[in-house]
Length: 133
Image (cartoon, rainbow, N blue to C red; front, side):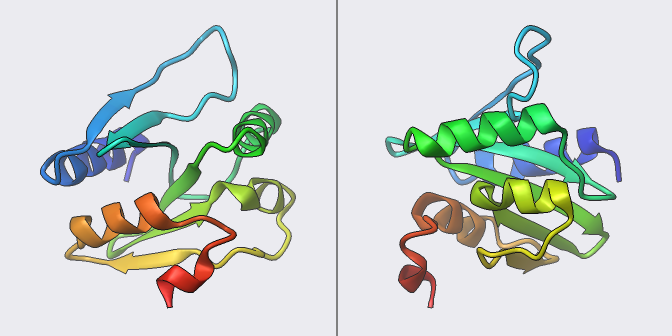
């Protein structure tokens, strides 16, 4: 699956839930995630990845800077036909360095539960993992 196909799927699924999504193509500032999302006053960013999960140094820097300033960033990865894995941006450096993931990602199986995925991204905070149990 191409990243553009993943974007079309995410856009269709989350837009139906009422999420305002903006695809960002930023040639000026390298590392900016692919999508900005906002729902009921909660804003977050998504870096879309299809196939092999890799990040560039500029992406890691942007993600870590945004999280340091209180922002939410997720890495939305589709490596297999029947699943989407959402990683907290706090693990960007571990993904980049191919180290073990420290913050548990969430795996969503097809047919994709977009309402659950929305809820997950709205409340998921590396300091609030108890909300997900």
